[in-house]
Length: 178
Image (cartoon, rainbow, N blue to C red; front, side, top):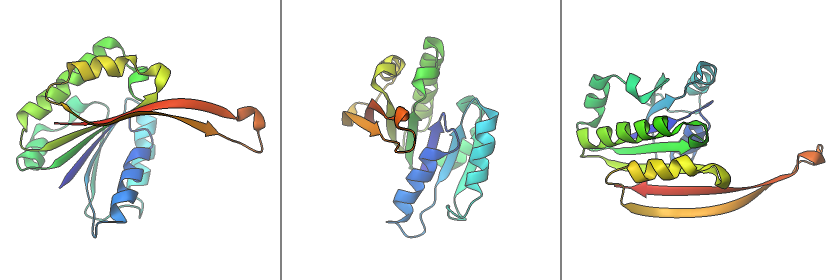
């Protein structure tokens, strides 16, 4: 039983990648996906991808603008038993205010304390120069004391057609669990 909360989901890029990795190694892999994005246009694109043949028919999808919009009964139904809960934050924190960052940390803390039987995993990825809000978020989280990995890597984007686009960027990624 896997639940995937994709904060700043965009067109569901992380959800698609997560699904592709696990469906190739686990027969009949399915998951409960929550795509969370302030952009309704991105949620429309994510819904289109969710309806594709990429996913098992037993996977289910919810698309919302905020974690606060998730139906409490739906959480209760899915989290009263132990689950693996992935909390994915790719490129999100560069766009949040300090208040939004701390509010999100409080929402995650409430989720974990309300449904303590599950294993929660935080996945974070962002360019190095834009992760100051993640540091605040991480500091405000409770009970995520296991650092599985923290690493920075430099990626080069090469474009033979438009050489002026060649770009190098350094990313930090981190995985934490309770």
